[in-house]
Image 1 (spheres, rainbow, N blue to C red):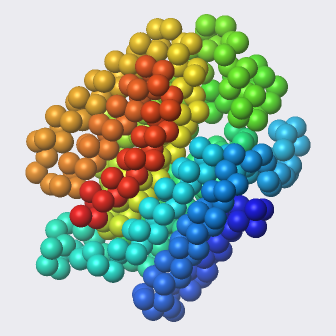
Image 2: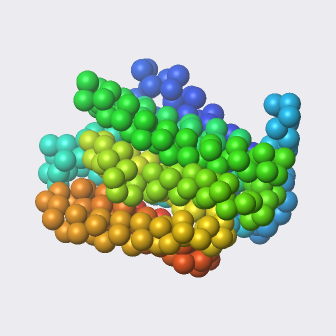
Length: 346
């Protein structure tokens, strides 16, 4: 079991480092086979772990004094999130050779998928698996930072001009704004609970006074809304339209929204205790979903429509969470991932 959990992180991480080292001398087809093989074996590791779902921490390390042990656990909800996200990456990489590039028949506005993009995808895959499986807030925050860096790196790799650099900075700053909200909530919970372990910290959050609970919930909602690409933070997700269809479909439209949905799933019980903020989240979710749907209807470009469709799905997820239907948020993550990918790849 420990080997399989290590494989979820080590396989894509090592393959990403290998591709980064060999991208100048290796053929495009070789690089693609490395990425496809690594994502495939990672997906098989996730599948093989399903019989062990619900287990406790399997890998525990303590490398920063005073923050407690950081571990990876094969929790059922996190493991299923890993499963659909990882298989999504494999599906996208499997379909990449059959997606026409810009200028080819049927290619539309899709850019070519350069070999180094596979390395970025695998690095984001390793970090997202850590974020889904870790039971420690600091480890999750660091993993989310790596994914945010991959969002920006994809633009630098595929759009190699000043426009790509500007969009990369814009996307990264938007995601940093969401992480600032997440960090605020984490620090308040750490002071209140005395721990950075996610489960105990969230339980302690329910006993906070109204003022501190409000700041915690506001920080979490901001982090979730940015990651889901809700209006007006859909602007970072719109940058993905300049990337290859494969990069947009998984890196922009799958992994980051899934991380936002999983965070929303974990903090849904706190929303129900937040009083006015719960009502604000209801209106934000419903209004954001309605606005994004209207914007999707007037888009001339299909990939632009899918960006707004993702924002609408995020609004509905926040509405459902604010209504207190926690299982629906998790089921939405599982159901929307393949649907979103098929819409892009179709």
